[in-house]
Amino acid sequence: LMGSSGAGKTTLMDVIAGRKTGGTIRGEILLNGYPATELAIRRCTGYCEQQDIHSESSTIREALTFSAFLRQDSSVSERAKLASVEECLDLLDMRAIADQIIRGRSQEQMKRLTIGVELAAQPSVLFLDEPTSGLDAHSAKVIMDGVRKVADSGRTVVCTIHQPSS
Image (tube, rainbow, N blue to C red; front, side, top):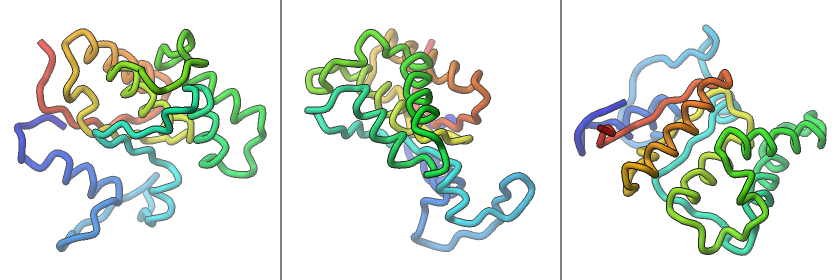
């Protein structure tokens, strides 16, 4: 979703993701052809907001592992959850920094971690609210390359963007 500031990109994405509670919203959201319940939407989606908020004393791997174990279903084996963490590290090119403390990471690395924390939950749809906001052109490309890999892995990615890269 691309548009100028105030055009409603984030609002539209919030509605689709089942996150909007204020105002009047009419319409129907289907999930695999069936009316989507709030719980069903929450279980199959990940949502990355613009802010990157993480426990700075953890390592990147610990943050991803915490998300995987907290948010994946209890029927998923420990081995599968750990495999999803490794997949996140690979898709977002974070293996080299996986065991480093979060404190002191660059803005681009923090953005990749934010995406990874949502990805560790194994959503089939990933929503990203302006993932390149505040980044320089090189960092924005690194982020979007990672997003491309996520999409290529079979997940649907819905992304708002304010400033397209040139």
